[in-house]
Image (cartoon, rainbow over the protein chains, first blue to last red):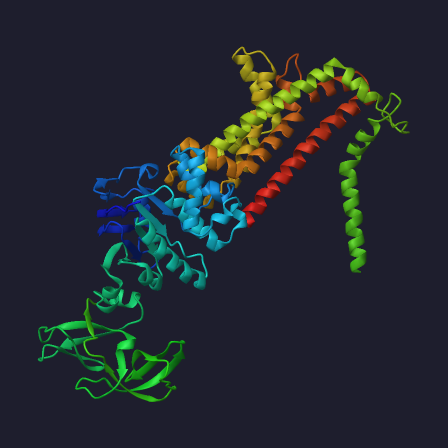
Length: 349
Length: 264
């Protein structure tokens, strides 16, 4: 099966008391894995429901493979959805569930059986075909829902928080599984989640939604390393956000923490917001623009790294240091920012 | 003290249940009476009165009428109740609350009023009294119950099953036949059995609306008027047994539905 390009243009969803989506436009490459990431209430589930045809947008268009499907019912859309609660039919066997879409298309029984087994094999579940839904585990249900949606060879597969109900370990396993299946089938995957780790490990492309608008979009690396806004910097992992004023040197910002060097040349006197990842704050005070001495106020061992909160003059900074360097509360640290790692972002209004 | 309290509770329970069940027990026991009068002492057991019952063409006809009226009114109330419940639960039309209240109103009206009202209406419309009218009356009283039972089974979570079926290409009729009905089937069967039972031993409405063809309760009543013998006990026992079986089935079905809602 081949994935199709997905286009969303100027989609608005207005409810009586609030605007769930506010002029969202987005192009999704054919065959890509796109994750729509956002906190609850950001409109991500509404957007997915509009793509699947379950909710009508107040205005705007949805295009699949260049065709306008805005007014096409879910049963006729070249999309299928893996629902958050899986929505497996409790009165049918696993095989009947998976074969349901083909049955609706009038595929003869014999061919259906063969294709059901083939699709169940794709998710490693060929052996549970005759079991009832109540007899399979949560992780298996997730994969059955995936098989049921994939068997009809949709141009676009929509996944609504598909891993949300699984425990952490199973969730990480299923992420790898989803990547493998995506590569094998080549369909366009659009996946909604609030879990940034899940988003980063799966996506070719991440779209961050906030209050019904697209806050930022791009590759996981770009979003993490060069966040466009303070919100997306904080939503995609931890970040230190600090404001300051551009100095005469044009690439130096004076902040409450001290002088910070940036990459760009900006207008002196301009107010800017900076985002610095905790792992980019390092123990060193050699450079010209170091942050000076800080006192450790909290220290947590997280396995691979230590997460440290350090304070200076009532300001707090989040630092992530490697496993080997142990710091105790009260210890003083000389800190600086790794070269080119202070990013200018759009601040909060 | 505790033991004493428990003893009182048990004794009270026994008195209450005895009060409720004693007439039924005596009805059943004296249906096996060997002599004519269903009064102590017990002279049976004997199946004499059952033989007489099945030889009585009036009784057998009434029994058949009751089965037909119960089945048709049960199917109709359950079918209409299902459609109303599905429409209100899933499509949420404007004024759904008002529609629901209107469907439920017959529950608050006495059978006497319904029977009398239908009788007057039929008279005005120059429709003769008949079993068709009795069936209509029974649909009116059973529709709210069937509707309420089925509506309680229409869980919001199951709506995503219907969405999934549509997503996979199912049309509306297929969604109803393949997803909605199978999922609420225990509720539908329970609603049918309860409607059937209520129609099966309903007296007042049938009394107002039946003409020469009567239902079993009316036949039993008219035979009671002509004289006391144990044949009416046998008929009553039969009515009771069928009701008991239907209600037990309805109960078991509603239990399986509850388990399904709790599990999975």
